[in-house]
Image (cartoon, each protein chain N blue to C red):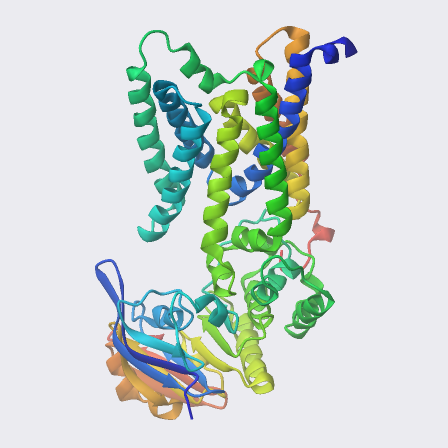
Length: 266
Length: 278
């Protein structure tokens, strides 16, 4: 079976900083892959290598069996939903929530063509399904962090993608909003069977259906494999450069970094 | 009052007000929402530098002015994107280059430099029929492009990276809008002048930005404010016998001040009106 995403020996550099060094990764259709690691490990760069927003110095990326290049990238992107890290939006931005979700349709609709009734229905149904119907006409700059993340997920789904890329969707959110977003990711994966890559800063909030984990450090993949194997004290201690303690709970695991002074959640 | 409409120069000036006001204030929405206000000054200086070299070489100043604006718009986007600069930094670099080139050209013009300096101030009361046709054409092209590519422009204004991620040719749209800004500035340079263009790019769009959360309405309001500023400016200029350019700038600034005062975006909601997520 041809992997839906096949990354081979890629290196990405932002001027003098190497963000990814000789990284390879292969993912099958329908998998939910969590990407973890400390700040600056290269997690976001790995995501953007898949949708071509990151520029490769060497290596190649195949998506849907096709090598990504500057000629086919716009076509490939239409089938990849992308939710970047939290956006800073001017509160006066003259664009509503419904219009932002519609932006997800624009690539599919194409140049010189207008959105039709089906496009509007897809957007409205998604706004409803992520639980923000009451906010549809609100200016996009007037939302809380959790609401904005739901809009971004609805916008990405409006593309009717085959792959979904989520970059730290729970960062800077309160615990209730974090739970709500993780449940939404679970629901989307269960209902649509989308190949999903989710960068998670806090591994405590891993979606339950996450079967594969990629752990990164210093621009390299240190571990890739089953989530249960990744969640070991030895591996996580090596990744985060500090002793780590895993506490099993009914909801999953709590990961704590052990220090000489006090315990903190990773 | 209606006798002023009998004069040919006044008819031309009114038409120039409509077309100049519309084209500058429509592209101003892009400049204001993308937070690149310096773009107007830079394009004005590029057109000014080109115009000066046109005078030096004895050709129509509009031709090199277009070329300089075109080159500037081609450089600003890639410099900002490749070097990962804030667009304003790239715009500032091009601005300084164009200012240097303009002063160099100015110094090379022998004798009085009246014709060159008129490019800074413009002369809305002495424009020709050919100027009007050119201004009408650029206004029509601007409106046509906005209608045809509205959804792509809306996506780019919202967030460039997201626009690219959904498969929109975001760079072509963004660079195209930069070039259109340059073309509009060039077309209006010897009519409304380099200084007036900056205020017509910024003030009407900034006023519209205060009044609506809808991008289509913002374009309509901005275009209306641009035309109104020019009309009222011309009218006051005739009544009080003062320079038209200066009065148009002041009128557009007053419209901005009124919009700021009346802006619903500045009002604080009453406790009972505050909803979840505010």
